[in-house]
Image (tube, rainbow, N blue to C red; front, side, top):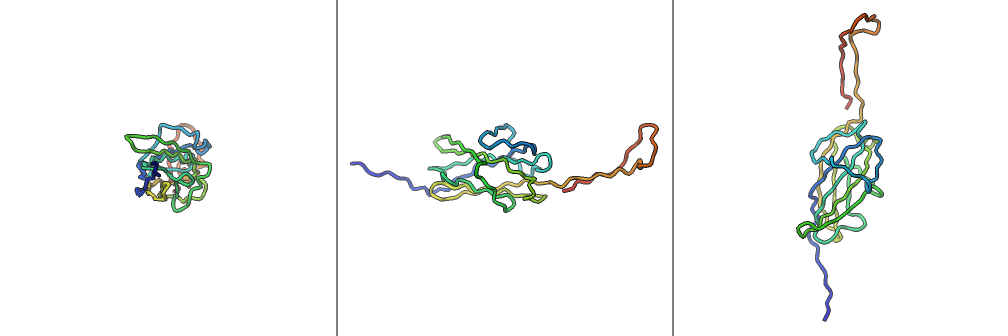
Length: 173
């Protein structure tokens, strides 16, 4: 007598960690090849100008299986992030629990889509049964260049020896 075995999945995936890395604006490494030991889990790290590329590392615990087509939804400041081609995944069993790790990126924070200031990264993880888990973290975006003004010496001053330079510097964003 053989029967059909099945599981009911009523538990939503648990997003255990959201970590991120900040890279140079010239980095184009695909998520599937990206590797760093400098993952950050603190809120409010600055992105912009020379360090505008964002990579996310998500660790999710799920009892049965993640959705095989669209396991993640990510938005930054209310703007959906296109994940096609920018995501890699792996899974393992830790203490009898399925742990999924996703790397997403690069996301260009200097693209003009994200305004200066605090931006919330919202992550939704969806399992094969369609239940969802939620978590967010904040980062700061500053793409407005600063400015400086030299007030002393004036442009018409003839210098004979090392001058004292005075002025102001202002952050743009």
